[in-house]
Amino acid sequence: MRFERVREFFRWFYRYRSIRLTSEGTRFVLLSLAVGVAAINTGNNLLYLLLAMMLSLIVMSGILSEQCLKQLTIRRRVPKHIFANRPTTAALSITNRKPRVPTFSLRVMDVVAGVAVDRGIHLLHVPPRAGTLQSYPLLIARRGRYRMEGIKLLTRFPFGLFIKAATLPLGADMVVYPELTPLPDVLVRDLTALGHDKSTPRRGQGVALYNLRRYQPGDDSRNIHWKTSARQARLMVKETEAEDQRHVSIALPTAVPEGREISGAPSSPGEHSFEQAVGLTASLASFFHARSYAIRVLIGDREIPHGIGMAHLYQIFRLLGLCHPTAVLESAPMPEGFRTLGERTAMGELTILVLPWADPRLTAECRGVSRVLRAGDLP
Image 1 (cartoon, rainbow, N blue to C red):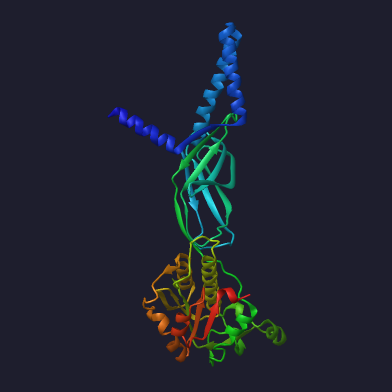
Image 2: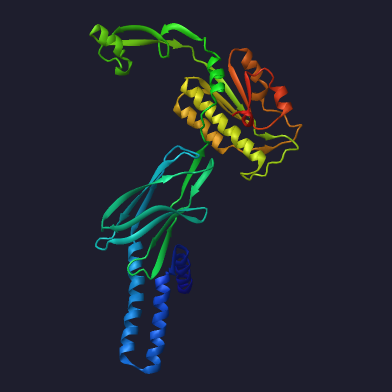
């Protein structure tokens, strides 16, 4: 039983600990061997003394470097919302819990997919019972799930002979949203013109000017009309016209038509077209959110009902970040939401169908939508 415990300890230790020689350490070890051979051959006491000193430096290097890696508490802070190809900032909180021994020369790296990723964090000195917060830029190229498996700590302290590493299982799971890109000017003008005449002449939250009146305590200072206030020598605020709640449905099919291959590789044409369509759908949702539309999305057989607000928009981004193309039979029934898009258009709702690829069957079923957009056809 005791032997099993010892073996398990060494398995655990070598799983989370590693040590390797530096170039200087390799030369030092070879020099130590040479001195040892010379001491044995000659019997010279001075060489034995020199060999003992060199071996003691190797032992001290292992002990002191281990002290640098012990009793460290690390916490990772990552943003709640991350978009592909958009720089953001993450942070690591590092605390030295040792009562008397400081930590020196510590490099901190993230472990992603089993590979240590250098974030440029190098701590020269962390005093005992003290901590530090280190922020670093984070840029993720692709949408989808992104997992950081742990933290890798490396130190060359004290003599630079060895690089001792410790891996801490500190995981972090994130969903990376699709990349948001500006819509083409032609498309922006086209979408803006749709439903432009739905404003009603009553006071409320809107864009068009409804009235100017005198400032009253409690009014939002952002609504002050400064030009009129300067002209009349008194504070005047502007009231805007309310707008009827406008609705939009954005549909993105995920079913791959028969005969089209999707390899799953980022460089494959089918996968590239689908990624373009996902990005366009996310950009459309952001565009309509900025204009106070109630947004409904259809992503394959998943549906998010009409809603407004940032929480609703992030829910859409999350679904888009996790969606994938799926192969289906041509005889498979089309989701109900796609078949009723034309009916919603007839009722006055704006409906947009985003196609990753040409699909005559889907286009025929969704006849009557307000707009059909092919991601690859946009500039």
